Image (cartoon, rainbow, N blue to C red; front, side):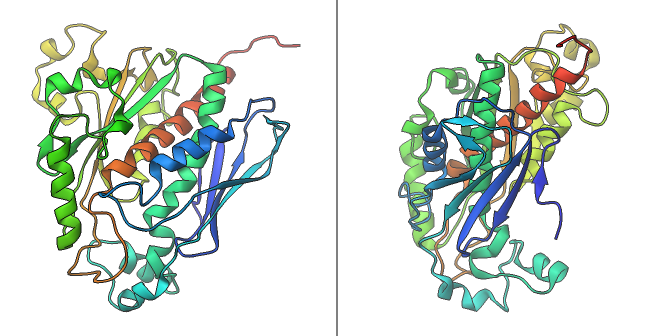
Length: 343
């Protein structure tokens, strides 16, 4: 099995399975001298951690990151950084019945088709638990990015869950909201209704999908390579590599095809472009929406095991982390765009 890495200059390799001994990440390409913030990693892991509310899986994991290499005296060494998180609350016996009867809509059967010999316990490496590696790596990327460009801010939130959608007025206030104060990360007065819906879904073995929206502001203009590594292309790859992600929109997205050209291009500084033109950042706010399908572990296909009735609340920090990985890669890359004397 290959393709376990992501990134070009800031490169991460993730490893581990849902019910294995541990999961982890190796980061290659992190510059030396970056102030290392262990608390940031733990805080972001806690935002993704299972068992954090009544609308998430009941699996209980402390998710304590252990730094194995690449950091000394709270600064990065420029050598590979290895960080490991131990699994402690596996209940593998709950997955015996799906060993030979894969869940409909899950990756179970396709992994079996591709590799023949697979770890079916908790979904193995196709489990959502794999995303903790992305959050660890994204946290380190955030440290690097904010040292290179301190004003960058990344904010994710749930803009749709099942039949619920944020209104334009609610979308206009997201930068002022404490997103994590909402159990669903859906910043709306209807949050309690959604909690009730998801709690009932959990009882009934039902599930819901939704949309994670991402806003990035204070991004320097000029990030992105104009042909094969357009920043929009790398962001799309990053987001669609997350399990259960089904689609991505940048700026106006699909609705742009319905707008006449003179109207769409009326002004070059417009949210319609989502902060990206020609595959390069404009310096304006980047707006991205990532759609996720309903969880496939429902009562008809997984009578046992512990599952999320909706992955959207826990997907928010994962989407943010993938954005940090792309931004950091391109922040490092842009230093190669022009020859500048350093010595």
